[in-house]
Image (cartoon, rainbow, N blue to C red; front, side, top):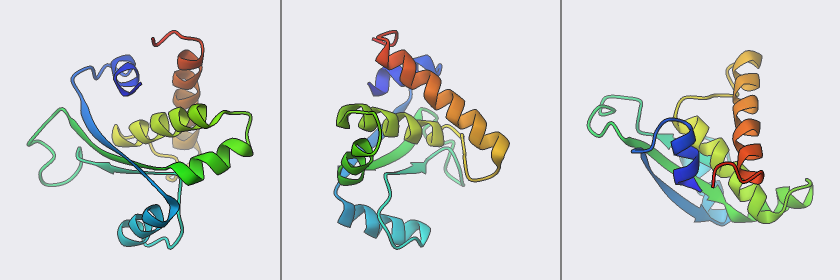
Length: 128
């Protein structure tokens, strides 16, 4: 799935790491790196920013997804657990390549539209 999304984004050579964790581990990471003492659904740690960003141009960074949060969110939406994981994966990848939803309404709208577009393509089987 990662390869399909990256290919569609024009990044077929890109690399990232993916870690699936429980809420306790996610809360610890969220507290340590963002100062937020609660679990969240996905964290993205970009390698395309900062002093050493040019060392490995194909390395996007690290994604961490909480399986427990994803399961809870799937129950309150019309998505299966797998669909929610795919949606969070897309969301995290978009963060790694520079999309942001916390900077303003315009950026949030752009990210939401791209996320929806990619998710719909996967659901329709276009990115197979």
